[in-house]
Length: 238
Image 1 (cartoon, helix red, strand yellow):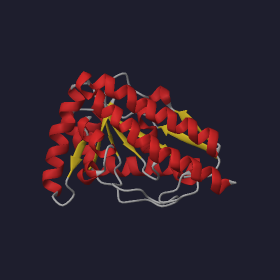
Image 2 (cartoon, rainbow, N blue to C red):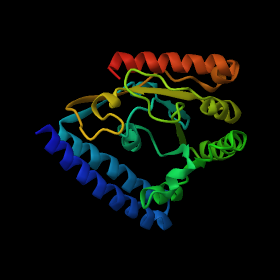
Image 3 (cartoon, rainbow, N blue to C red):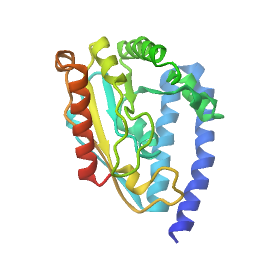
Image 4 (cartoon, rainbow, N blue to C red):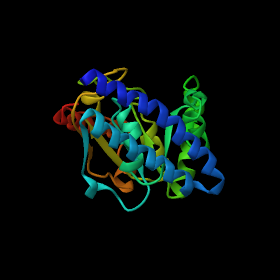
């Protein structure tokens, strides 16, 4: 039964994602809010299907830590679930991700049209310049910036290599940082066909204000973020 329910969800997800991506693309000439509406609807629809077909519910903790202005969100990356959930977790935002994702039909095209910051991994120096330039511009427009510091999804119980791009952006843009942990990989593992029933908990950790971000050494702040995010992830079972 679990196999059948997971198969049904996967089919629905593969159909709905290009469909909503197309709606994002078609509505883009009417402004960002119009496209964002469809992106958020895609997120809500996906998690409704997850609940109905796979028995997966979501809980959001730590909303009180969210500031009332745009900041840099530094999040754990374990699954496709946190990617899908982001439009219902934080206000309108842009991602920092590898540019190759723009080549995915419909979904990648929608990402590009929404102002996503696509970096070329082969040129770290140019990539960080682009992150600072484009990320700062987004923050100045009150658009949040989301980054997965590990760069790629890590397996449950493991820790990827945390990179300082989000910290560099926050320090240059004089922005705060909002860390986020979750256990999504335990229920929707990377490259896994099966979706396991249960509760995915997304937990926002205490906000680090701009003054504190600016005052700390980059390596110290990176280690703090890594320690806090990983500890919360393990506590949640991720």
